Figure 1 (cartoon, one colour):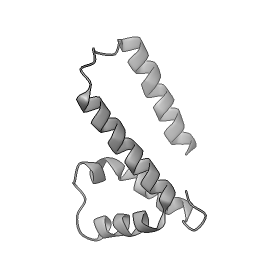
Figure 2 (cartoon, rainbow, N blue to C red; figure 1 turned 90 degrees about the horizontal axis):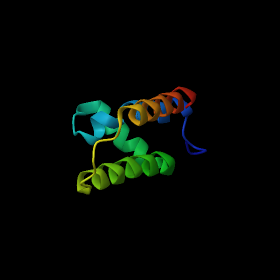
Figure 3 (spheres, rainbow, N blue to C red; figure 1 turned 90 degrees about the vertical axis):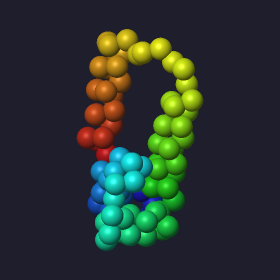
Figure 4 (cartoon, rainbow, N blue to C red; figure 1 turned 30 degrees about the horizontal axis):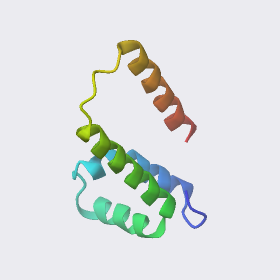
Length: 84
C-alpha cells in the first residue's frame, strides 16, 4: 500500500487480483483497478510478482508438492491474507 492510496482500495485490488489476472474483470470495476494501478506502485509490485510467479510455475516441470507441505503452505498464505 502506497502512502497516497487508501488501504481499503489496495485491499479491494488484492481481492480482485485473481479475476484481473484471469482477464475476467469488465466495465467500471476493471477501469477502477487500472486507475488504481497507475497510482499505486505497491499494488503494481504485487500484481507483477504474482504474474512472475505464475510464469515461472508454468515453465517449471516440477513434481507435485507433497500433501503435508501443500497444506502448510495454504495455511501460511491464508494467515498472511487475513493479516493484510
